[in-house]
Length: 58
Image (tube, rainbow, N blue to C red; front, side, top):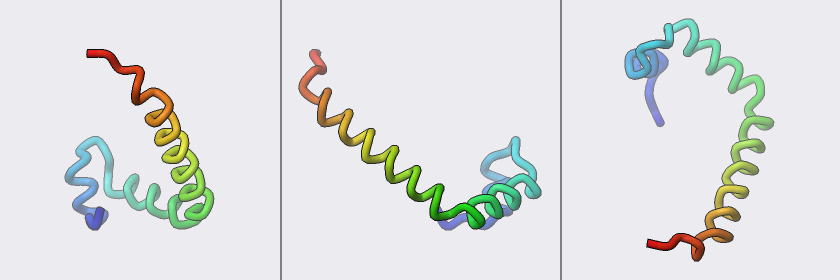
């Protein structure tokens, strides 16, 4: 989203700056795996939306 670590810590008040840096470090060390998982989850969500789009009744 383009926020700096300091801005993230400020926006999400229950996280410390150290926790933000730890999360960013984890992401960068596992980027390919995380991105693949996010893509899989997005594809599953889209499939479910298509499957159930006609099932919603007002």
